[in-house]
Image 1 (cartoon, one colour):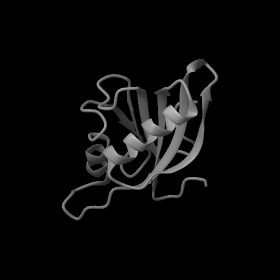
Image 2 (spheres, helix red, strand yellow):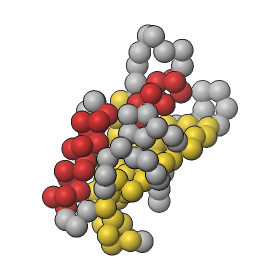
Image 3 (cartoon, helix red, strand yellow):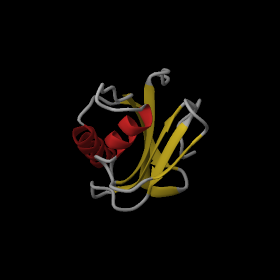
Image 4 (cartoon, one colour):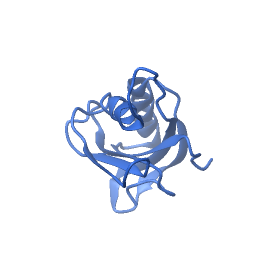
Length: 123
C-alpha cells in the first residue's frame, strides 16, 4: 500500500542470510518502535546481496504533550538509535533522517525515515 499523508516511511537495510532472518529483524524493529508497521517492500538489496532492503510505514506519532511533529518523529526514531542525521525543507515541509551506526538492533546496518516525500529514502 502506498504511504498516506499521515505516514512516516522507513527504509531499513538488514544484514540477514535468509528472508526468515530478515523477518525476525523486522519483528524486532516493530517491537522497538512499539507501533504497527506496514511493510511495502522487502527483498535482497541489489547493491549488496548480504543485505535485505525493507520499506515500511508507521503512523506519524501523535501526542498532545509534544510541541511539534518533528519532536514526535525524533522521539520515535530515538527508540532505534540515539543519534540521527536529520534534515528538512522549511516549516511544515518534508523531513528526513538517516543513521548507519549505533542502531540498537544488531543486524540492522542502517535506517532512514522520511515524511513529505513521494518515495522512501535509500534508493
